[in-house]
Structure formats: C-alpha cells, structure tokens
Length: 254
Image 1: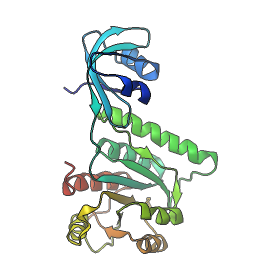
Image 2: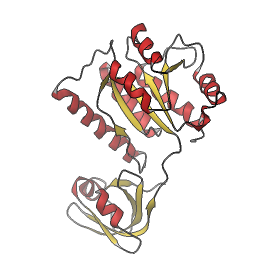
Image 3: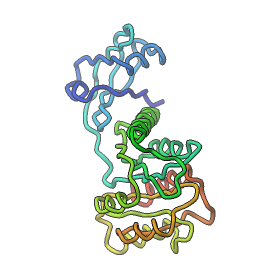
C-alpha cells in the first residue's frame, strides 16, 4: 500500500534532509493527527506541491502536529511532456468532476474557459473564487492520488484570450464530434509531421451545448487542430479525462 501524502510549506519541505526531523502542522498536520489518526511508527510522505518529496516515519504525534524522521528527500522529475486541460465551465458540477479526474490522471495544468454556450459564468469576484475552488479541488485530488506535483489552475479565459494563450503551448487539440480524425490518429499525424519534439499539449473540452462554429474558427486560426473521441458524444465531465488517459499512453507518459 502506498504511503499517505501530505503537503507542507515549500521552504520548510525543501530545507529538510535525511536524518532531520520535519514537523507537519497546520491543516495538514491536523488532518494527519486528528482525522487520519496516524500514529508513531507509521510512514508518510510530505511534498511541497512542486515535486519535492520527503519520506519518513512518524516519531511523535501532538495536538494537530506530527513529527517525521526524514529518511528520503529529493526532487521528482516533472513529466517530459506537459498536458493541459482547457475545461469549459459547465453546470451540475461536471466541470469540477472533469478537473478532479484529470488531476488524478496526471494533468499538469488546468484552464477554466468561458465558452459561448457555458451556462455557468464566473464574473467579477466570482472569477477568483471559482479559480480558488478549482485550486483546492486539484490539491485534494493530487493528495488523494499521491502526486507530488499539484496542477496549476489558470485564471478563467474567454475565447479571444484562449486563442491568444494558444501561442504559449506547442499544440492545441479541440475535442469535437465533427472532427475528421480520432484523437489517436490526430496525435499520430502530428508526431509524423515532425512535432515529436513538442513538450506541451492543451486539450480543449467544450460545455454541454458544444463549441460554436465561431469559437472553433478562432481556435483553428490560432493553430488548433480538432479530434474526436470514438463514435459517441461524451459529457463535459468525461471527455477530458478520457482524452488524457489516451494521451498519457500515446505520448509515453504511462
């Protein structure tokens, strides 16, 4: 069984080394000591959320803290190829389901997208509250799946901003039911065209009502390709994780 993972302050985590004692406090310490009720002699990992991981054994449990005798410490390598989920805001929590599952499957960053047909809207103060909620969601999902890297959650983007942002990634693939090629064939074609040196791929998932022709045109003009996922139309909560599982295999991440 894998050891439970908790997140600690980056500076403190990176300052620890084998042979030292690390004290896990705050919300994570309370969760370990009070909720999980971990005891002396049990092993756990602590990460800074950016790939630095400590491994050790609990030597003492206090009121909301655990002391860990550090046995291993080091930076884990980031994936050679970054995967980014551009997830349209969707009703019924389907966008959050997608983000949570994608985190467990290894997504490296998430971009909330205000699509034309998105029913849910993040405006004004709600935009930052929504982003922070997603950030909390990916942190919890990373912790559950024992990931030492917590995906970055970008600020919400509308379509013009998303089209401009497309220039920051090596390739963007829009999932669309009318696309000529399945996702596997699209990626194979891109690799055959000489883009095997690409180090980042963004996958765009639309809302319940789909991606409009105007939006698709803007993203294509920004260099995006299209692809479909099998013969069926998937929910907004399912498409991203399904695509990510396939891309993990095609790009050699799994």
